[in-house]
Image (tube, rainbow, N blue to C red):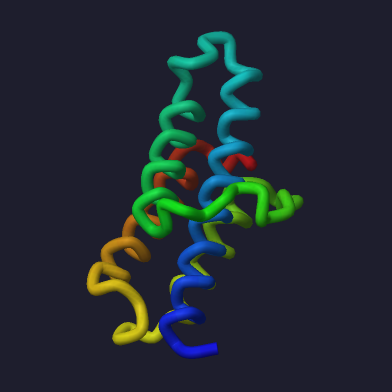
Length: 114
């Protein structure tokens, strides 16, 4: 496997983790009284947006749900991005990694719910 294919596979996997995290957030928003206007729905949208930016063709079904929920998927996505050598990934790889770190910080401020 050449480095471009390896980097693409890792981008797909990171995006899939973000989509799985978004599903967890959607599940939490269903429990909220406000439903679609909840913070969890907003987080889910941001997770999907960053996931689509990383890899528009990644399918969410590739990832098994993680037991620790959103946080676990964000950590896994970041681990995938960290495995990509800077010259093998897209030119804005560090920006996308920063976005995942930022979403992790948002999750922490939301009370560290799963």
